[in-house]
Amino acid sequence: MQKNYDADDRPQFSRLSEGEGAPLYEVVKRHISESILQGELPAGTILPSENSLASKFGVSVGTVRKALAALTTEGMLMRRRKTGTVVTGWAPLHNLSHFFQYFRLHDKSGGLLHSETTLLDYQLIQANEREAEKLQIAAGDDVIRLKRTRRVKGIAAMHETLILPAARLPDFPPAEHLPPLLYRFLFEHYDVRVAAVREQITAQLANEEDATLLELALPHAVMVIDEVSFDQSAIPVILAHHRFSTEHFMYVNEVR
Image (cartoon, rainbow, N blue to C red):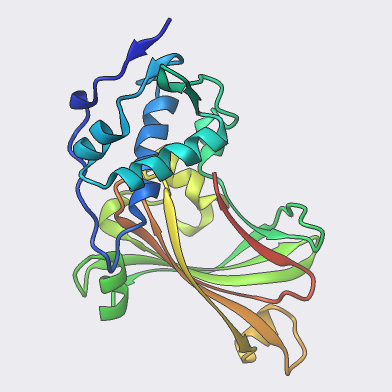
């Protein structure tokens, strides 16, 4: 049974700043996909026209069209002649615990590799000006800073620093209880869902810390990734710095 989706029931969608916001189509996509996954848009629901959605979300028709096209490719939506855009009800990743997994390390043939995470350092400190700007908080606000390494089948693969705004994460677990799957933990315990990631990727010569943590012989090149992860409301939630060697692995960014 098909029913129409009343776009007026949804809250107004705010525009994002060009400097810090996630891509608009990604946030529109996540807004609709979450409604589907949470059962607000059951199978058979007919979405409003692209013009209606664009007006409600406060974005261009092209932005809405791009979001709907992506959801159609993923299987959440289908296009029917004379009917419109319809919720399929068979999203391939319907389980929310898997929807926001964030995969990085793959072997040279493209196969997914599961890494083992080791926590090296855990601090509750005050954000400096750069961290505050990236996380859209005030300088001096408390942040949680995590230093971790990743190994794949015993091989050192990556070391990383993650910075999270403490005010959004009350009762954040101590080091001994910190889970390895951080993005899933944020979703399950704080309803913080990583919906978009903005990355800057460069190649650099390894430094002494890289050589120690990644067990490299200098000189050696490393890949460096600076990123900001945004939640479902396009608010930055994680500031990260990753360094890894591509000698054994390659990097694949996939939020799904």
